[in-house]
Every structure is written in C-alpha cells, then in structure tokens.
Length: 434
Image 1 (tube, rainbow, N blue to C red):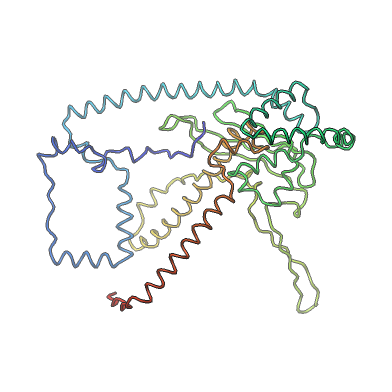
Image 2 (image 1 turned 60 degrees about the vertical axis):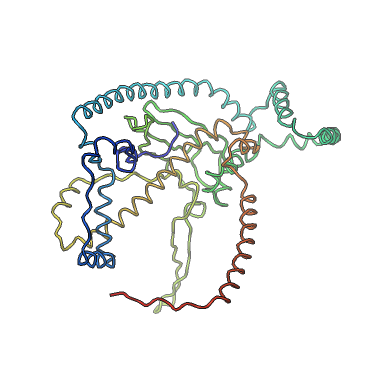
C-alpha cells in the first residue's frame, strides 16, 4: 500500500534506447547497417558556435529535445517481423501476469481490512489507558515489565543491581506519594511525544502546534469501502477549535498502477472551526495603526497571512485538472507569441514540480501515520522505535559530524590560500562575447 506518487505514464527508463540496448545486438542486426556521421564543415561549425552563444535558441532546442524523452527507440522498428511478433507475445504474457498481480493487491487490501477489525479492541483499550479512562491489569503490567527486562539484557550487571537498589528506595518513597500521583490522569502528551519522535512528521510541527496537539487523545485509521483509508484525530475539549474529531481521507485510483500497486489519487481533510483568529495557528496576524489626515482619528488594520503549521495537513493540495480545449489552443498559437508562451510554460513546469512535491509529501505523511505511528505508538512514545528505523537519527550526531568536517575544510582552505599567494597571478581571459 505504501509508496511514492506514481506517474500515470510508464517508466521511461524501461524503454529500449541505444544506451540500454545489449551490446550483443551490434553483432547481428545492426552490423549490416553501420551508422554514418557526416563531417562538419567550417561554415557549419561557425553556425553551431552562434547557436551555442544564443541562450534563447538553446533553450528552445532543449525544449524540443525534452519532448522526445520517453519516445520509443527506432531499434524496435528495425527488427524483423518474426522478432516483433515475439515481442508482442511477451506483452500478452505480461498482461496476464499483471491481471493476477492486480487480483493479489485487491485481496491483500481486503486482508488488511480484516485484520484492522481485529486490532480495533486493542487500540480502543490503548486509547482508554492513555486518556485515563482505564488502568492496565496486573497481568499486562507484569508482561510489559518482562519485555523491558529483555530489552535491557545488554546492560552491565552492576548497573542493574544499582538500579534495583535505587528502585527499592524509590518504591518506599512512591508509597508516600501515591495520593498525589493518583491525581495524574492517563499519560500526558502521549501522542504529541510519539509524533515528535517521528522525524518526517515532527518537521511539520511548530511551537504553536505543540500546544494544540497536546490535546490529542487518540489517532486511528479506518479503511474505506473503495480503495483508500481515513485517519481520525480525536481531541479533548480545548480552547483552540470546537472540533472534537478531525479527519484526513486518502483516496486511491480504481485502477492499479504500472507496478501493480494502488496509485494515490487525492485527499480530503476536515474544515477546522477555530474559536478565534488568535487561536488559529495556521495564520499570522499583523496589526498596525493608521491615522486619518483630516480627522486625526486612528484605526487598527489587521493583515492575516498564512503560515507553516501541522494543521495545514487537513487542507491538502489538490492534483491539477487539465482544462478542456488546451490542446486546441496550443495548435492555434501564432509564432509571434511563442517566446512568451515558452516562458509561461517554464513557469507552469516549476509550479507543477512544486505541486507534485507537496502532493508527494502529503501522501507520505498519511502513510507514516497509517503504517508506522498508529501500529507502534508506544514504541514511538518511548523512543524505542527510533532504534528500528535507521533513518530516524538524532540531529546532534549529524551536526557533530558536520562540525568536524568544517574544521578540516578550514585547514584545507588556509593551505589553499597560502599556495595561491605564492603562485603567480593569471590574467583574466579576454571577453569574446558578440
């Protein structure tokens, strides 16, 4: 189920090209037709140099060449008919395999739904203990402690004895403080702590978000009847918004992708009913005063600007929809407007790349919640899950390595500066721009 956003077209890296065609081919079909390369005349070389010095013309040529990416290689067309028939037969065989794989993926989805129902009573009990509506049984506590002891087998015996001795003293003190501790309900900031230990999600959380997320009492997932799933975030009563439930629903396309997996289509999020502008963590409020020149009266102007926030997660980006008639408009364009349209196309491509990156991140966050956080919530809360995922590294370790490298780089830079002082200075090249 998990995976990055897949494009609707096939993988162009799989298309036969001269670069990925086996070299053995040159010993058979291509030997009879050796390539011929005409020599470049002096006047042609002058034209090529002028083209290279014209950025606009080079950009146009690169755009035309880019349109050829993904086109089928002429190598297939050069093969004999009997070989082409074999290739067609292989495609038919692959189609049968893809149909079986599609059936496998659909049955796998139904299996996930089946076991999700079996998880529900366990996750419901987890929710009650976290919220303070229930307490774990003595059997559950003993079994959990046994698991903790197994995890601590690598520790030294002396440290274990020391901890046991300190634990006995603490047990005596804890008996006196039981009355005070009984006032603490559930496990405070359970979900906030678990989320902050999962780096992919924690990078989207600001300081203002943390105060809101401390009101989380449960996160769960439900599968849809159609391919897709829904994330459910349950909050206790709070001062920020009136919603008790926020949802984020991910929809897959009905047809499977080329790789046989379900392909992400779009997502929908709940509308958050913020109690006031000041409590809305997705906006910044800028206030300034204006004075009327005639009446000398002052008034306060408010400017609301969007800001980064985890709660933008519930307002997901929408995939672009191609407008009808775009192809017809492109065919009727005049040559005089080509340059302007090329610039607009470049801007559109940049915007499409940015949108695709946002869609991919949004989909990745949903998969992180579904596949990693919810099933292993207690391990993310304690931090044990970080040991099982190599990608979840401490930032401090990364910074220490960079600082060490920077010191080496500074020494190298000083040596380079000394060498440059001793070496004779070269004259700058003559500008030959036409």
